[in-house]
Image (cartoon, rainbow, N blue to C red; front, top):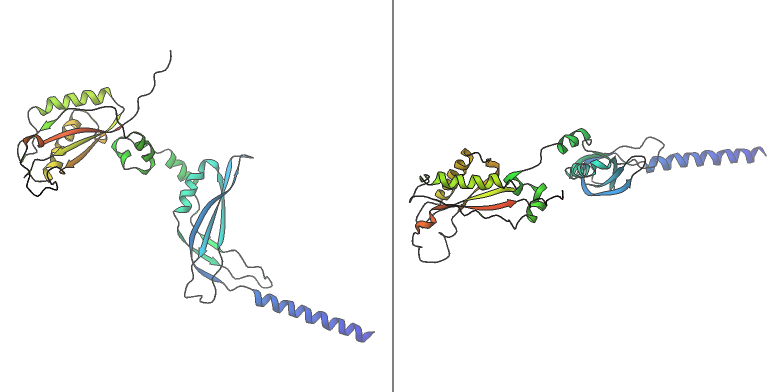
Length: 277
């Protein structure tokens, strides 16, 4: 009986040693490097107890020469925010296409691999609130702003046409005596129609004139309209020289009518429908 007990104790000790050895063998090696963003996915969208979403980012650790024999698998990280911050958080996560990441050494006696840790700045809700309160993009700046492109596309067909022209002497960007009267007519239209949000001030040149004159003529008219009280944020200067430098082999004859600045409505907000009394 004593021999059987001794044998059982010996087998138990052997099994315990084997388990400790197996744990030591499966403990993962520590790793550190860079991770690439693979995707940002909304995995939860709930209204209770408060409206909130959970976004999951997937990162792929990038192999590096410091650890030639091991690279961790894909890493997932989840972030919970109130629903009002969903778009801001998505932008924040997408802004970090690469981030420092690490795979810590597992503690002694633990065989379960630890999670890869992604080091990206914490999402700042206060900064998101400040950005949401920023004044909206207005005037001609909307044409270049990514946040207003949908509305700009909807406004491509404008309703107003301005026929005023500003003529110039040959080789000159100096305004003529008649320019002030034409400017007052333009100011009257823009004052009566605040829904014209961006007016193109298009400078032109005749054959043989310097291309830079087109821009200087447009700038002179813009400044004149600004001096009459029109916000320059509603004015966009354009130098047009396509007619002068056409595809024909024979040089074009100078046309005095081309020495001018014309006006083109680039962005016009649709008028609001009248409300019933």
